[in-house]
Length: 273
Image 1 (tube, one colour):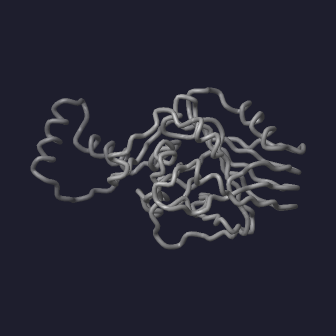
Image 2 (image 1 turned 90 degrees about the vertical axis):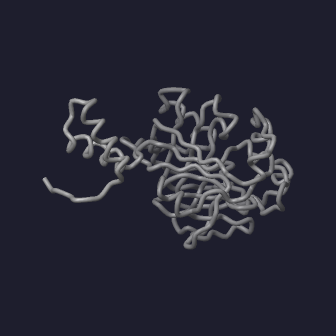
Image 3 (image 1 turned 90 degrees about the horizontal axis):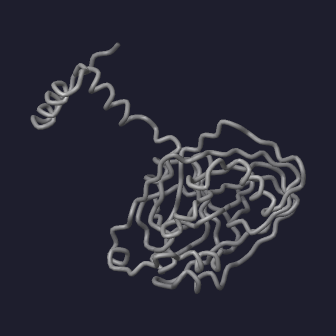
């Protein structure tokens, strides 16, 4: 066991002394437990930037940096400032699928208006050997959800006969989500290997997340992707991670602080999807 020497404020030292008096633990045990809690990776905790209601209201300014986003997870999805394309977070890298269909790995620090990520940790891999579609995948994922009251993250790797995606086009500030969704370039890919990244959110989360399933796709060559509309698979492997914690980083912009956000943006979200 190692010994460390450090300095703490007088106020913190007093709190430590009080903690030792209150608990049947030694000073070493209290400090060790506190450090363990602080340094422990936030497993199974979904970290979200802003809310879906803010997107519906047209609040697309960046709130959290991409580097900060990756501190909280290695798998997830979202969008970029001004709804400039679709975000896929996979294996600790952030990819931007542009409205022209091109894909860019994000190397520099950017601000993000909406995203949800987690440190993905699945205990099991399930084979989906038969041809499958998006609707079929949703039914299969339903079978691996033990509750309707917690969030779930999914990673699906495999070979696809066809993939149908779309990507949002950048819009001006305060354009509503429905207006932005009226022009969404769509893409069709054939015979491609890739990964689907997905989230499932409970119905009660409609005020701050997209209820139900939300899937994004990226090819293995990182050249094609987008928000997933449908697909036909040849062989897939499914991994599932049940979320036990949920954290939202709320924007501090003037637009967000003074906006009148919809209580239930579900209808607008489904139309945009």
